[in-house]
Length: 525
Ligand SMILES: Nc1ncnc2c1ncn2[C@@H]1O[C@H](COP(=O)(O)OP(=O)(O)OP(=O)(O)O)[C@@H](O)[C@H]1O
Ligand SMILES: [Mg+2]
Image (cartoon, rainbow, N blue to C red; front, side, top):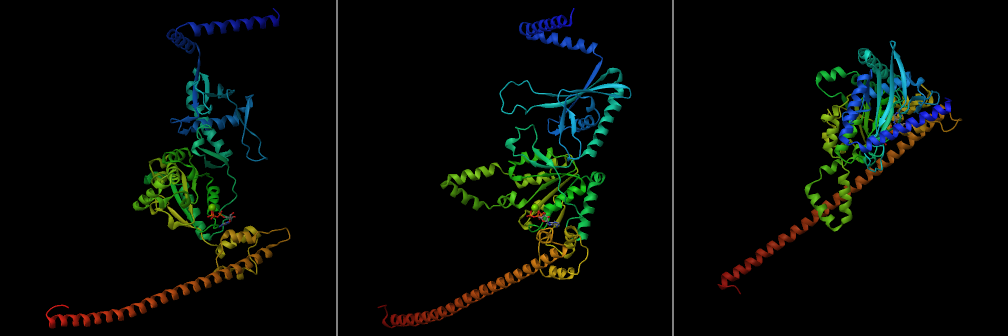
C-alpha cells in the first residue's frame, strides 16, 4: 500500500469513528451514555498507569491566586521551556535582559527528575455555559497538569513537588520585578479576568540616600522599617497582624510621595496605590485588600481629599436642612445619591486597616499621606492603625546638604554658611530647593546652582517679611476697627444710659406729678 492510500484509509477510519461517536451522542439515552462514559473512564484508569496532579491558578473560591501555581510557572519558565514549541513572551525587564518565555496554553513539556520522566502541560478551561456574554474570558481558569507513572508516586509527590516549589520561589525572588499597582474601577472588574489591580513595573529611582531629611530622622525610619520587615516571629508572639501603618503629613512638595518610593526601594516591596474614589463601597475595598500580595506597601495619597471624613460627622440638623433643599432640586438629590453609592465609609476604611481581614497575607505596610493632618478623624490615625506619624517639613540646612550632594556633587563650598543662615531665617520646600539647584544648561556649574538658591531664598525671605508686615498691618487695622466699634458702642451706651436716666427721672417726675394729682384730686383726670 502506498503512503497516499494509507492516508486515505486512515482518514476514512477516523471519519467512521466520528460518525459512530456522533450517533452515540445523539441516539443513546443520556443515562445510558453516562454509564458507558463512567465505565470507559474506569477502564482507562485501570489500564492507564499514569497519575495526574492539577495545580489551579486560583484557590479559595478564586479569592486568592495560588502560590504553587506561580512557583510552577516560574520554574517552568526557567527550566522547561527549552522543550516547548509554542512559547509566550512575557514582560521584559529592560532592553539588556533576554526575553522571558513561558509555555503557551495547551503546550506540553517533559522533564527528568532523578531519572524519572514527568510531563507538564499548561491548560485552561472555559465553562460550558453557552449563554452570550460580552466578557467571554471572565470565567477562564488556568491550571498546570503534572503527569507521571504511578510507580514513582512517592518520589514525585514528596520530593519533586517540593523541589519545584522551592526552586520556583527562589527564581521568583531572583527575577523579581517590583510592581506598581493601581485599582481598576469596579465597573471593569468583569472585563479583564478577575484582576482588580492593574500594574506596571515599579521604577522610581528615589532612595533614602537621595531623600533630603535630617539624618537622625531618616535613620530612625530606616531602623523602624528593618525591624518591621524582620519581625514575623515577633508579631506572631505578640499576637498582632504583621503590618505597620505610617502617616506622612506636611505641606505640598516636602517629599511625601518620594518617601514612599524610597521605602519601597529600601524594603524591596511592591506598591499598591489605592485610589479610594474609584472604590464603590466597603465590600469592594475588602476585595481589593485580599487581592494584594505580601511584601507590599499599600498607599492612600491625600486621604483628606479622597474620603469625606468630615461628612461622616455632619450634624443631623444640617442633613435635614439639606433634605429640605433637595426636595426643591432633583439634580442635587441625584448627585447626592450617586455620591452615596460610591462611598467608602470611615468605618470601612478602619476595617480595611485593622479589621479581621487585614491580617490576610501579612507583611504589609500601609501609608497615608495628607497635607492637613488636623482634618483627619482621630480614630483613623490612632496608634495601631497609623503606628508611626512622620512629619515631612520644610527644608532644613541638613536636608539641603543631601540635595547639594545629589544635585551638584558638592560636600563643601564657601557659599554654604550664607545658605545656612538663610535657611534659619526663611522656609522653603525641598521641591523648590531642588528645582533651584538643578542645572538648567550644560554651562551651569555648582556655584550657579547655589547662587540661584541664595537668590530664591532671599526672595522668599523678602516675600515672607512683606506678607508678615501686611498681615500685621491688617491685624492692626482690624484691631483698631474693633476698638473703634467697641468705643462707639460704649459712647452709645453712655448716651442711651443718660437718656434712660432722663426718661426714668422724667417718668418718675411725671409719674410723681400724676400720682400727686390723683392723690390731690382724689381721681385721675
Ligand atoms: N525630601 C526630599 N528629598 C528629595 N527630593 C525631594 C524631597 N521633597 C521633595 N523633593 C522633590 O520634589 C518633588 C516633589 O516631591 P513629592 O512629590 O515627594 O512631594 P509631596 O510631599 O508628595 O507633595 P504633595 O503633597 O503635593 O503630594 C519630587 O520630585 C522630588 O524630586
Ligand atoms: Mg505627593
